[in-house]
Amino acid sequence: MATAYALHPAVGTVDLTVFDEIYHQYHNAVYSNIYKLVRQEAVAEDILQEVFIALWENRRKLEATKVAGWLFVTSYNKSVKYLKKKSRENAVPLSEGSPVYNTIQPEEQVSEVQHRLRISMIEDAVNHLPERKRQVFRLCRYEGKSLDEVAHIMNISPSSVSDYLKQANRFIKDYIFSNYAEASLAVAPLLVVYLLS
Image (cartoon, rainbow, N blue to C red):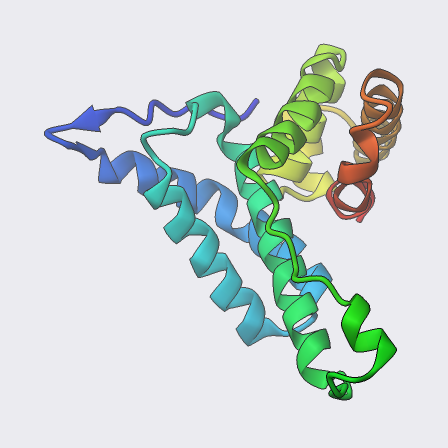
């Protein structure tokens, strides 16, 4: 199971050792999820850096038990923001007189409430998994470990790990869509990357 880090103030700052531990535990998995979206190594590295800078900046507001979910949701949001920006840059400019131009609305930032909702929805679902499936999910998705690595840690076969992970993915998706009917639409694109990639 993922380590629960204590993001505590120490002489007015968060313990850098703890922050380094979080970085080393999660950066590979977070990078992997960013790369699946942007498909460019340099861009993925830049976004990864932005994510951990944001983690540092939000260290006093973030609950230690929510770190993994926060990292994945934040990396997803920053990746999508980058892709939208690139899409706008590659779009053909429209004149102000164009009917299409007049219907374009400024991009709305994902609010803090929506951001927290996405994290809490996923964490709630993960916390309702049976223990072994929860452990497999956290090791594979939060820590980025391979099926073989998880099989070795849990002393089960890689095929069992794969089965547990598929069942966990299905449960989390069904749980969110059943228990958060309306809000689930906002998190649906994230689930595709977060669970099924």
